Image (cartoon, helix red, strand yellow):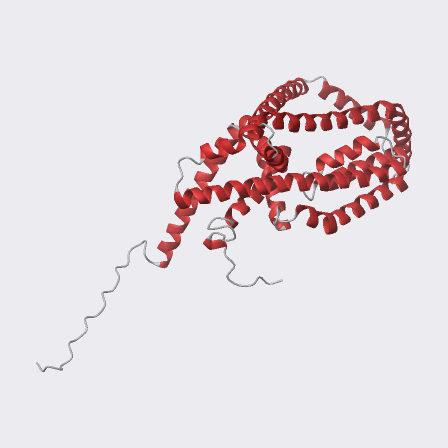
Length: 373
């Protein structure tokens, strides 16, 4: 062969095709991986649901501790002992809650007779409306409904439901005591507890865990404080409207608005419907329509002006994500699940945004192209 003769290039080896290397095989592999991940998540959720009596008080204590974090940090910077700062924070919150409860009880006691009289008038009006309906409802149908209600109250099913209510009350009190104890230690020794949790981590893992912890406290605290301010604004606005219309139990209804506002999107709407029903029964249809208008106006002002300013960056979630989180939380944990679903989702998204750095999200979540408006 000559010096410059061309050496033939060997043909590339063709890959061996098996059942798992073609397109369908890769799809099947991904499906199996997804099923495995979903199974692990399902088992984890099931285990957490079994520990709900412990998990929910701890989560609530973490949210409250995050909300108190700026106050606790300020008192620590002023040289105040952690125990004294914790006692001041807990006593202050306890006095506020006690004052609200006393105000509600006072309003109910002073307006109860008026509410009963207005409710009787409203029922009489409702009966007159029923009498003029296109279809007739005779006395025998009313008697059947009454007998059905009496049978249910005297049945074993109602008794078992009452026992379940007693058990739920006992669980609530147990969880409340546990939450207060955990909250005390979170406020008193929160930084030390977190440093103890981070002891197994080193280097980049330690820095990432620190970022996650800081982001969690920032998100939960901002969410709790922002939602409290927004809920107070809703309650004050709707309460003033109810007071001007002289709707009975304006103060308790305002408190209900405040509490339900912690369930985004649907909470304030449900409270507004309740207030409109009370106005309908006690003050007539015109007052109910005005109450609905007040609720819509307050919600629009809160959603378009107050919430973006107060909540800031603590809740950067799309409305669809919030609705899906509320639905999943309600299915898994009823009312408490609906309350906790949104802050937990916000924390999960916050962790993704600081996974690789202070402003560096995890690689799959990095913005690669502009979204379509």
